[in-house]
Length: 428
Ligand SMILES: Cc1cc2nc3c(=O)[nH]c(=O)nc-3n(C[C@H](O)[C@H](O)[C@H](O)COP(=O)(O)OP(=O)(O)OC[C@H]3O[C@@H](n4cnc5c(N)ncnc54)[C@H](O)[C@@H]3O)c2cc1C
Image (cartoon, rainbow, N blue to C red; front, side, top):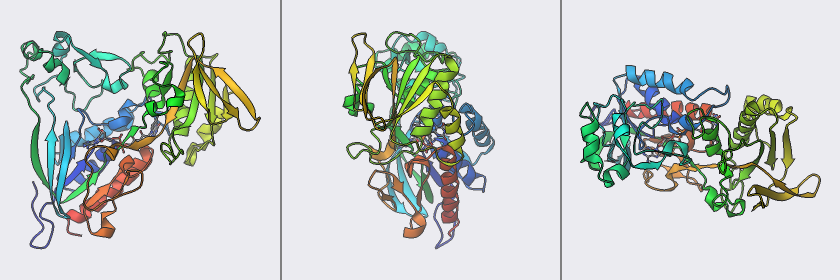
């Protein structure tokens, strides 16, 4: 792809974007629309990243398709963007203008002939925890990742192949799209500049042992709350207690669950307060008689979203309790009981709830697995401070891979990274 630049210029004018979330998608389109070839690599089966798994997103509280779909249209219309899903980078060698990137492609077992007709899902019997819903429900092991998937193509989970269902699936597909024998493969790409946009993952709730996440099904975390409220989530959008399916009408939202804590994530993830304010709104929209208690150290509603904070604050059925809860007990009726001290009143509380939601923070996805080790600076938390311009390299980070950001900030950082990448491949 695109070798140019003359004797001293970049050897490749292709820009590689790693990570197909909102940041990677933005960087890829912005760079392609300036006339450059772009390869967008995503390790999962679809684009959209974690935004697709939100129920709605601020500032306007729209559904994730609003925002993502328009970008998918731009990708569809732009032949310069090549999307490669199920692909992970395993090594980067070389330097600015001439990187050799080793990529591992995981088998999807479904090729481009798939029309998303769903015959494979009818044929398969193996079930797996639903990755889209963070394992809150189960799905067939031949599945469409979600209703707005891009590409709109099924995936056969390795569990179905391991269970010996491959041939039955092949036979069930009228289009010859199933490839049970597809194996993992490794190949190399050449790129002049790289945008690293691998995003985040929720901090592990299991590590917050005092909050009993692993012991009570009614203790969940904020990303699971997004799925619980979503129409395509495990409960069809009803906010119900996972333990018994009853409406969750008395809910505690625990801020800074593991954040701003030297034993876990020492930093603030910036979005959790607004996330919980959004969750309070989800619950209050569903149940007129719901009571929501938000336990906080201090509320950090940045930018113009202060007005959203004030709106929620004026709801008399949403209580703000200044307190960092100490621990969770399990009550005799099975309900989780939140225990701690109200900091202002200096009163000890032991409050039972239908549902406790832990507002866990975002940690960089690249804390595990491969991350670039040339031309980037990794901060003490694992975020990539990749400002290639200052150290003469051609790798730039975007979105939450570079630090905790909301969607609009991720998009801004992605546009900036795309422009820097364009400058590199133009020999600037
Ligand atoms: C509970 C909660 C609620 C939120 N609500 C809002 C909201 O209402 N509004 C808002 O603005 N923000 C919200 N956010 C923040 C928002 O989710 C992020 O800003 C956004 O996801 C950042 O996008 P990204 O592309 O940087 O990362 P991601 O969404 O994480 O996307 C990264 C992509 O990279 C892929 N990837 C990872 N590693 C690799 C690899 N090695 N190779 C290839 N691909 C890889 C991943 O599979 C993923 O598709 C919320 C966050 C939380 C925790």
